[in-house]
Each structure stands twice: as C-alpha cells, then as structure tokens.
Figure (cartoon, rainbow, N blue to C red):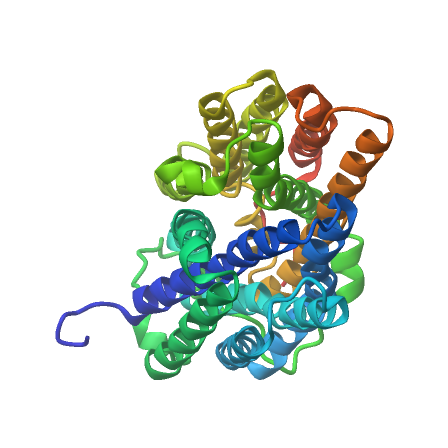
Length: 436
C-alpha cells in the first residue's frame, strides 16, 4: 500500500463505505425475509409494522451512547465490536413469525448494536478526512447504504424463493463477520503524516493550519458541551432534516414491497432488476451531491453555508414532489420512477444536512451525529409503525388496500415533512464551526 502511494485515509473511507453497505443489506434483507415469512401465516399489517419497527427501538437507545463510546474508546474499536455483535445475533436467531418474543428481542438487540455504527463512523472520518475532502468522503461512505439496499432488493427475493427466509440471516452473518475481519486487519488510528498538505496564506494561524490539515476529534478527556449541543439551532436544523430523511427512507424501504404486492399486484420476485433502481439511484445521487458540494466550496463558488442550504433544499423539495406523486401512478414503472426520483434527491440532500455535522462540530462529530441520528431512528419507529396503523385503520374503514388512492396518506406525510424540513434548514443551518 505504501509502495502504491495510496493514502491510508482512502482505505478507511472505502472500508466505511463497505460497512454501511453491509448494514443496509441486513436491514433490507430482514424486511424482505420477514415479510415473506409473515405473509405465509397471515400476520396482519399492524403486527408486521410492530416487528419491523423493533429494530429502530434498539437503534434509538444506542445513538447518543454510541457517540460517547466512540469519543471515549475510539471509533475503530466501537465499529468492530458492534459489527461482531449484530452479526452473531443474525447467525444464531431463527426466523419464525410465531416466536414473537424471540423476534422482538433479536431485532431490538440488532438495533442496539447497529446504533453504535454511524456515530463511530463519523468519529473515524472526523479523524481521517480533511475539510476539503469532507463532502465526497461522507457522501461515498453513506452511499454504501443505498448500494447495499439495492443489492439486497436484487438478490434476496430470489434467495428467499429458492432457499427460504432463514437463508438471508446466514448470508448477513457471514458478510458481517467478513467485514469485521477486514476492518481489524486494515484499519488503524490516523497517523498525522497521512494527512494531505494544504497551502495556506502566511498570515494563517497555526490553529487554522491544523484545522485545515485534517478534521481532528477532541481528546478523549475533553468535556463534551452537551448543553450547547442540545440548545443549538443549527444542530436542531440537522436533527429535523435527519428525522425527515429517515422517515421517508424507512417507510419506502419497509412498505414499498407491500405497496407493490397489494396495490400493484406485483411481487418482488417478478420485478427483476427494476426493484433495485430507487436505491441504486440513491447511490449515484449521493456521490454526485458530495462531488458538487466539494467543488462549490473548494473553488469558492459558494460558501459552505450556502452550499449546504442549496443542495439540501433541492434534494428535499424535489423528493417531496416525487413522494406525493407515487399514488397517482397505477403502474409499476411509474411507481419505480417516482420512488427512484424521491430517494435519489433525498440522497442528494445529504450533501447538505448530513455533512453539516462535521462543519459545525468537527471535534464532536460523533456526538452530534448520535444526537441527530437519534431523531432519524425515532423516524423509523414512528414512520414504520404509523404506516402499519394507517393501513389497518383504512382496512377497518372498509377502504380497499389494493387501491393506490388508499395509500395517499402513507406517501403524503413524508412529502409534507420534506417541505417543512427544507424550510427549517434554510432558516437555521450554518456551515461555520460553532463548537471548539
């Protein structure tokens, strides 16, 4: 690696990209395998929503502790331990919809384990990635989520059809353990010599040179400014947008398969490669957003603040329109196009709010990410569970779940949230560092 002159920070970014990829393979895989197993014994929509949302109950519990643990113990170690834990659970727990308690507990603990991952990743990236590479590095890392979701949507329906739902758990466990071994071998603490040289005016202060040379987290003994973080309006702008992003994403990830089967009379197995397009679109647009953001900032076309606001607004507003258009299309192709546009532009918006953690608090990126992702996880609990209850209420009111009109509320709620959140980010966000 040294002979190739390949900076180790690129290896770290690549490994975190694979990390998020595997995490979302697990999430999509469970949704697909459990839905098939639950439908086979006629589990109702509300109970399905309850099981699907249990992951997020565990996930929300460990977001802020995950940021604290990464700050105190180091992101590298926390990533390894959390990955091994959820992988072992997947490998050992049977997928049986009749064994509700076991399923509830297993999804709860998988959620707890995975809740440490994203705060730890942000801590690691804050250590390794300099500001001028921040947008595209974070975008590449998080785009692994969408590529993983796309791969899961393409591969798992056929696997379930030919080898049964339990086979998905085995594949997920193998992938998790494999990544853990690779991370253990190739990751390390960031040596200062790996950071890129940055040309600076002679009048620049030593502290500014240090800041631009690399995003360094605070020493593990530094007191975390919890009160300032909790009451910061720019942080709340990130929090609100994180909630909305994940509400829309989790509703589509968990309920779009049901929408296809009930309203469009089409199973995932019959959709071919088109079922992966929404998530593949997220992968593409996430990286486009990162490259565009870094270009606008490094070429001084726009300030960091204006860049974040521009991309966030474009992403969320276009996504809102596409989400609310989904029920208007009564065909699979129209639904795929709308959901692809919605998720693609949501991913573009991550070059706004998601990278903003490192702008406002580079030394406490893992902590702020933990606070922000707590809201994102609550969106999973609220969105996935609420959608199941909306559908059950519609069914109780003798509304036809096979009609796309019945699903309007399901898609209009995240659409309105996208518009609201984009306005909040426009008003309150900043690209300036506010936590030293």
